[in-house]
Length: 348
Image (cartoon, rainbow, N blue to C red):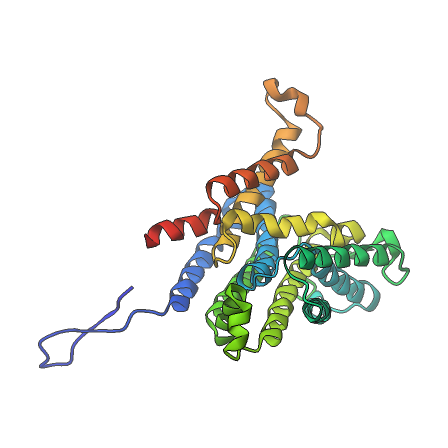
């Protein structure tokens, strides 16, 4: 994108400004996408508006996972831990102490980031990599689920129900069920998360992180502070995922151990990025839109299937089957994901 500046009087030629830096282009595209999305809840039916909010929650989770596992190369199968910490911290502070979900969200981000740093430190200290690191994150998420299930402090398996209020309140992030405000709040959070991922990727720290991902030994030999930047990456990833958990609780007004820390949450964070493109800025966006829409299509199909598919009515698990088929096809035909493959072909 080139910008032409008018030449001063008496000059024969126009002067061309230098092209925008990649991050500025991406931020400009993000701003356009957000502006285009703002009127969507005013156009879509209420049911589709709920799907749009769910897509934005998927997007928040996907962006968080992509920062650690895409940009950082540290594959996590336990992001439910950070989602659940964000959800439970926010819900506990609101239900027990009447603290605003915004403050609870910030507290959840801090708790999730601190826990991620502790997990990351010991994992990196003992050289856990690849499948071993992924299993460690999964085990920690399951451990948290079991602890919360048996903890009276976290209301055991009952979880927390957010108390309803009579009026709308931005401070409490609570509006009528069909209000477009939920979409706008989720859009602002998701837009901020994507913007943070863009800035981080193109920052000095981001360049260190991608260099460490590509060749940790070479990066360390050149003086890159490997441990510090790995811990920074996992903390940022966990904090963004915690935002998704806090907003999820406020939108659905309920959280329990399975909804907060279940392995399905980790899958929902991973699948959109795999489909869209791991390690790309726009991969989580594309993947979240596909997965969110697919979830709605499968739910509709199971509720009111056509006559030749009547045997599917009332059954569950079709969305998981479709996820699996879609992931297999993407990995087989587009190994870098949709965005990654398109970008690679454009560079040729």
